[in-house]
Structure formats: C-alpha cells, structure tokens
Length: 146
Image (cartoon, rainbow, N blue to C red; front, side, top):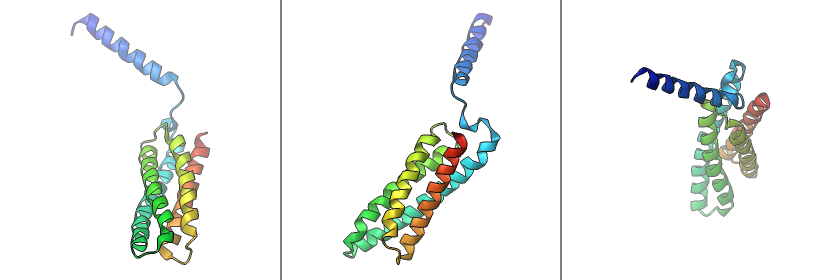
C-alpha cells in the first residue's frame, strides 16, 4: 500500500467513524446503564427458559385433552421467542434494545395474563411470575435509557 492509498484508507475510516458517532448516543456509551442491560438480559433469559418449559407443560395438557391450555401454550412459545431475542440484544447493549424490550414487556404481560387463568397450576403460576418479572425489568431498562 503506498502513501496515497494509506491516507485514503485512514481518511475513509475516520469519516466512517465520524458518521457513526454523529448519530444518537448508543445506550452502552455510559457504564451507568450496564447494570440495567445486564439485569434485563438475565430476566429475559430466565423468562425464556420458564416459558419454554411451560409451553411443554401446556402441550402435554392439551395432548391429554385439556384444550383450555391451547391459548397459554401458544402464548408461552411466542413469549419465549421474544424473550430470547430481547436477552440477546440487551446482553450486547444494542441500540434496538428499547424497541425490542418494549415489545417483550407487552408479550410478557399477555403471557402472564393467560397463565394466571390457571393459578392452581404451579407450573403456570411460576410462568406468570417470571413473565411479570421480565416485563418489569424491560420497562426499568427502557426508563433508564429514555
């Protein structure tokens, strides 16, 4: 690489960095938000695991003929998917965390409401609690960033 090419390369790199930096501040620019990202990522991961397990539980109940668990079965698997995505994005402090965590909180609220219809079922009560905890963690993270 000759001197002109090197100057062009470094100039283009500096321009790219300047353009990237000129936009909105990234949520991970401040260490004070790292704790909120981490707490949210953990809550989302926990909720994803509990919802996956509750999906299996509901599927077994539906297979036994308890058709009233079909709705919660679908809510749980959808919630698990959204939580997994939110966990990955918040773990890496993505700027899209706010949007995804807002959706995650709403999906968790819906899943919790479906699971709370069967309060006597320990598995579903645990799922509802995990969903409420996740929704709260997502909203807390959002509040800290906006």
